[in-house]
Length: 382
Ligand code: NZQ
Ligand code: ZN
Image (cartoon, rainbow, N blue to C red; front, side, top):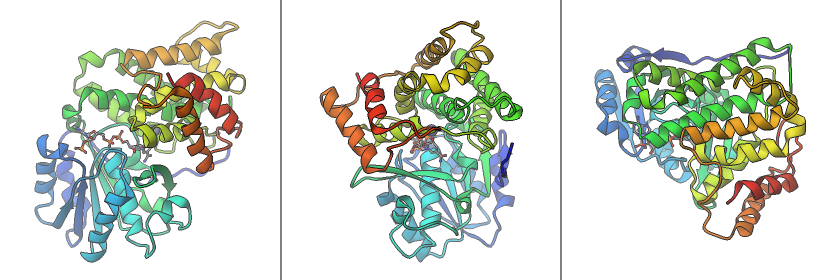
């Protein structure tokens, strides 16, 4: 076992915690509150944030879209620079938090912010950032990653930097009460796949903590899926915390990572506007069938420890069927139907984008070449 683990984000968890922002942001800071399309204005979150910031000097930037674009966030960058903003508070889901991560990093860079996504600029400094989470799914509230889209070219790319790790994250499960059902379903699937990307890789019997914790989180999600219709305070709190723990760095420490489902899924979102969680449910089962030989041992472990399946020669195959059945049980489809073109054209289009983005050797063994991605897409696209 060998790894460096740290997570510097202070978590303020529970009902009423938005009020605590007051003490978390220095009163002499000039704050920019960034939010999305306005859900926070309808569910009372905006009012709670405004009340907490009553003693601060603050202004706002709204209109961050799902799958945030550099084009939109560049307008926030201009405000941060022109108004000498020295603290940004992102209030929303993964898109608002990711968009804000881009903004706080780009504000400390003189060139085009998109350089951060292409790797031309490495982020080493950023304006301090914190988050009020309203949608449990991405883990962005306490990690260093962000995914940004360039609308003009439909490129959806990620960057990672410790400089954009939120200083604190408010996680009040009450904010989830206004979430549409499909966003809750997406969140369950996204958290599930985050765990899988760090767990269904190689079998590492010596990594007992990470493996055992990943299995606990997966079992939580199954339980939450099974009780979806009886959602209450405890259900919401447990989903919010489980989704956070799925991608805060802990279960990924010292283990091999996959992320191929995410990389191919991002192309489906960029090309066809498929919700992030849905893109993952479409790709993952086909990808696991394609990679079954290298993933067999871990799929068997997951089958027994997570789904309670009996040992059998086809246990890995049965585990993939169980994953698919889980997605269907929470109302998420596992085939792409949103492509407007013929299937062959859609497969060509996605493979073309993967090639353009250098996604030519994906997965924990870099074994998913464009040829394998093509096979995966053949069965994932209806
Ligand atoms: O914009 P508003 O009006 O707030 O509406 C949003 C949006 O339309 C709405 N919503 C959020 N909280 C709500 C609410 N509606 C009612 N009540 C609430 N409490 O939900 C819609 C979707 O929001 P979004 O932020 O797009 O969803 P999510 O949190 O799933 O974020 C998805 C984005 O995160 C990226 C994805 O690629 C995608 O761009 N990811 C970020 C990661 C990270 N930073 O670590 C990892 C993930 O794998 C993922 O790639
Ligand atoms: Zn994800």
